[in-house]
Image 1: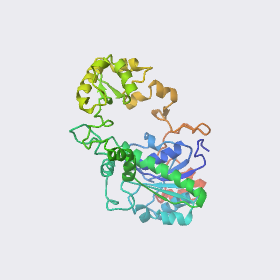
Image 2: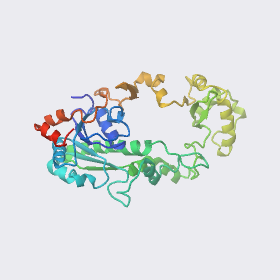
Image 3: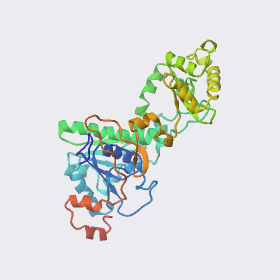
Image 4: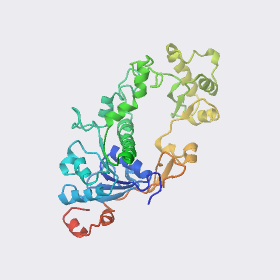
Length: 378
């Protein structure tokens, strides 16, 4: 049995892309026994399962869910599981015979996690889309970008992973907690639109208070303020500055060798263009690492802007073990941390279908050869 706070939890994951696998990865990272149901026959992957960190820490069973026999095998897995995760468009799971009604008729204890972009209902429920579309409708994309320029997609972190997979994992854990009282599972309908909108909650409050301009890139936290932005250094790299409070701003001024008496008030928005020129001019005289060294031990809130490849070797990340090597690839470690039940380092992703026989043998399935010949299993 795996270590971690979710040790003993049994999860079935119907293979998908991005947010669903991320939710399953989180559960697996924290100790859950996750069986990923992959296609019985090889297919095209955006990232091969053998190298995709999102597939780490769980076994893979190749089962053809387009056959009645394959659907029955998945239902057998669900009979003894605590959680099922699927990321199909609304109605697809029902069409293949794996919808909530069918699963709950056999196992009412199971938490059924559904991951979509638009949700299970609504005018757009069955429409195609990607992260950028979901966060656009959620109101999370429009505020991101420079003044006078178009909105900038924040990778696919806000929709797929923050508003999608992370929200689904949280919803599953909430449903598991409720199950302790009711004795029943339920359906968790997680949509990326809902999750991305939820991430903007604070922004709605700031706007309601009259503290946020509708003009993109002209506010304190969107790059409009000179004390909360990124700046290029002499070596063509960048530093991040977040010196909002007066005492932090004071430390930054010292690090940059600026004369406080010659500077405009840093919270005076009318003076931000002038102040930005001064700060940018002081920063570009030094390399990134020189500035980081100057800021060390201060509260200047100046840090290096690191690439994903550089982040693993930063002294703070190295000291905390924020990144680990799994299967020859450096990647983020499980999070958050637990003092009594720390999880193991995840195992490397398995080859698709490599655990099919072992998983089915645990269910008492004995006619593996016949099922393989019929194309039901890998």
